[in-house]
Amino acid sequence: MVTPVWDASLFLESFCERRGASFLDEPMNLATNLVFLLACLMLARRVVQLRGEGCAVPFSVQALIASIGAVAISSAVFHMSALRWAGVSDAMAVRLFAMAFAACYMRWLLNWPWLWVAVVIPALLSVALVVPGALPLSRLYGAAPLLPGALGLVLFAAILAQRGDPAWRVIAAAAASFAVAMVFHRADRPLCELVPTGTHFLWHLFSGIAAYLMASAVLERAVQRQQRPPSQQLAPVVA
Image (cartoon, rainbow, N blue to C red; front, side, top):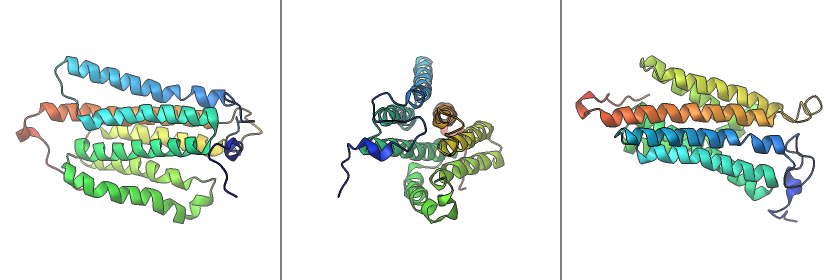
């Protein structure tokens, strides 16, 4: 028997805070999606400010910022409904942001041409989707699907640090915030008896901070590169 996509019982046990299938059964998990929305609005405000100063903001960076708003909306819908299609939408929005950031990182922080980015992104996506399921850690409270993002941020920060790029500190801070977020993401169900509200809302908080830092670093560097003459651009570096 195929379970219909509108069956909320699929996710009734997914989060500690959810006790039923009502519309507002996860108030903390729902409210903390405002962190992503706030991050999106703050970045959008910065874009408007930069445009007012005569700076050009690349479309790719604007799309990255918009993807944070998509995460906020899709996650809010999921925590309001606990439906299968909403869960899929939530997961896809997060992956979209991750791939958009990786692309912008390579283009604007490493100064790779878009052709190189287009070649590497499918490989990164394959690693993110295939490798976690093959790892023994995939049985550790389902932590493996989050590992590519965490390890990727550490690697991205290390590459920038090796190049002497001060932006490594922002990416490293994002990696640290995401690592804390991972802990709270996986602790939600195991600590349910000790923490009645669960800890998933703290996943929203710290991953939202990470998303803001990641997009902010890309935005500022992309604008800087747009203002420099070609002779002053850094040569592309292959990690």
